[in-house]
Image 1 (cartoon, rainbow, N blue to C red):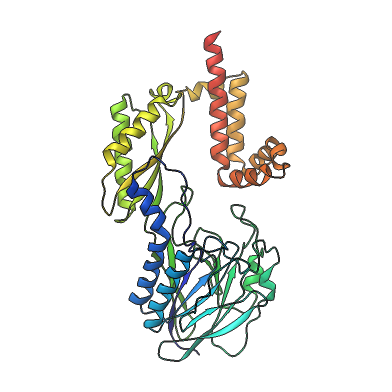
Image 2: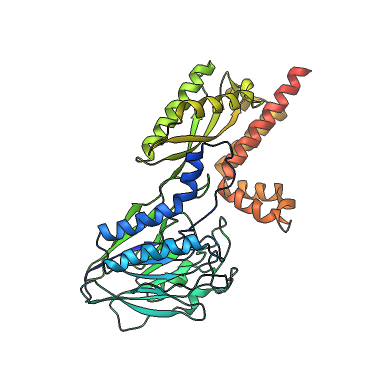
Length: 426
C-alpha cells in the first residue's frame, strides 16, 4: 500500500520552435506564434501550482533544437525555479530534438530538478510535498538525435517503491506519422512491471493502455496546421491503492483548427461567404477563449464548383475573411488558408448504373471504400514507385496512412469529372 499523490505528465514542449511563413499575417499573429511555446510552458507551471501536484514529469523534447537557444534555456530555468518555490519536483528526459549531444549553456538546475542522463536508465525517488515516498521515476535521455535502439528493453522496475513511473521518448507501435526513434511494442511496455509509462515523441495525446497506463500526453502547443485541437498535459491522480485517474489540461496559447465547409446548395458567393463566417465562429468557440489559427476547406459539390476550380474565387474569399475576422485582442481568429476540394454535380444513381468506363470507375471506388484491405493493396500498387524512392518514400507512407480514403475519393472524383468534361468537348 502506498500513499496518494498527484503529478503532471507533459512532453514535447519544443521551446522556441520557429514558425515559418505567414509573411502576410498581421504582426500580432506572428508575435503570438513565436511566443506560443513559452506561453504554454508558463501555463504548465501555473497548472502544477494550481492543482498542487507533488511533481512534474516531462518526457523529452523540452527544446526544439539540440543547440538550444539561450532564450529557451533561461525561460525553462525560470519556470522550474517557480516550481521549486512551491516544493514541486521535476523529472525530465531529453529526446531526439534536444538530445544531449547539442550545445547548451552552463546553468545551475534549481533544487528538485532531476535530468536523466543518456548512458543508462536511471531511477530517482519521487516524494509527496509532505515528504512521503510516492514512486520511483525512471528515465534515459537521447545522447544523439537518431536513436534506433529499443530503449524500453533497458527498463527494469525496482522493488523498493509502491509505484513505478517510466519516462520514455519513442515510437510505440510504429506510428508512421513520426520518425521511428526508440521503437518498441506496446506489449514490451505493459509487461515490464511499471504502473505508468509517461511517453513523449508522438504529438497526439492518447492512452494506449490502462493498468498499466501507457500514455502519450501529446505536445503542449500545436506548431503547425497539422497539429489541430487542444494541446496540453495530463494531470494524474494516484490513490493509496494505486488507482490511476487522468485529467487532460489544455495549455496551448494559440490553437490550430481545421473546419470543413460543404458547398452543397450554396448558389451565390455571398451564401458561401456566410457559411465560412459561421465555421470561423464555431472555431472561435472551440478555441475556448484563446487565439485560433484556422484552415478552412470547401468540400462537396454544388453550383459554385466551376468558379472555385481556378482558385480566383477562393483567393478572394480568403482575403475577405481575413479582413472581416481579424480583430486584435486575446481571442482573435486568423484564417491562414482556404482550400477547395470540391467536385462537379453528378447524377450518382445514373453513374452507378452506367455500363461504360466511367460507371466502372465509380463502382471500383465503391468496392474499395467498403473493403479497407483491398484499398490498401490498391494504394500500395499505385504508389510503388514513390515508396521505393529513398526520400519520397517516407513522405508517401506518412501521407497515405493519414488520409487514405480522402485520397481515394478525391482521385475518383477528379477522374470522373475529367472524363465528363472531355465528353462535353466532343
